[in-house]
Length: 329
Image 1 (cartoon, rainbow, N blue to C red):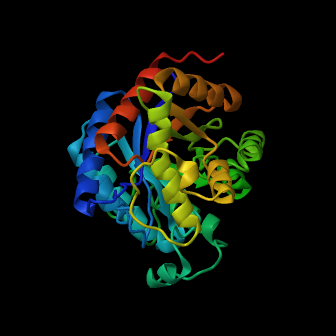
Image 2 (image 1 turned 60 degrees about the vertical axis):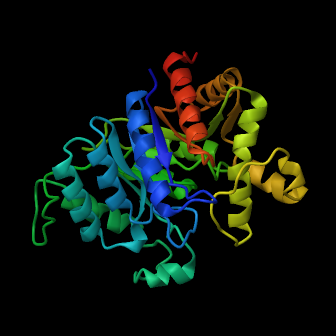
């Protein structure tokens, strides 16, 4: 069976507060563990009124403490915002508390606007130091330590992933020999090329013998196609707001998204969210199978910002039922 996982941004829905979002995250994690999901990843974003996962390592600890078997990790930590030693200590501590359950996905973008990036007190080097920082961070998790040590951290060998939405991450993951996750759930333009680069140039390493690629997909599953499209409209509105410089809480769904977004804006949003499956179980199964057969991922990670928590739970439950039964050609 193809492993399937969850990417959660801990969305703060309109009419709710961060406390609600964090409680919903733990509830979703507990249920997805029960439904057979492999990993539960949380993403670092800052200065976003609709996202409650800014303190990502803290939230990972909260989810890991509230679950038993599911792997919990970052999808990802935006490494330019942090000193590698600090992240090594944070995730080394998590791995010490929850052995063999912690993942660390690393991204090169700041995950926020430039003013907030400056407020994070890290130098803005355009990501040029990212490969060096990745190697430094991985070194802190190893057995052999010289000079500065991550305590806890040394010897934990936390699995490190490279995340990306361009060829840069694919090239780096292949060069170092790390697993690679592509952000196709919001930036699918370079997906085909990135997969090819990663698989064709991968170098086996002490961390990984062969390429391991994870495909990110949006899922909005419901009892009918109309309801699935209705649920998706919240994320369409949120993405349009973000791209127009007006990030906010996750909007409530609407019946006719075309009457709420200008045609050009809706076209931009739908292009960005092209790697999505929305609708009834039969429709979602067909669309998921199409993505899996086209890209042949080693794993899929599902996300879906849905306004109503119960509807979100149901969507992930339907998706789990589908993925457990899928038999790609």
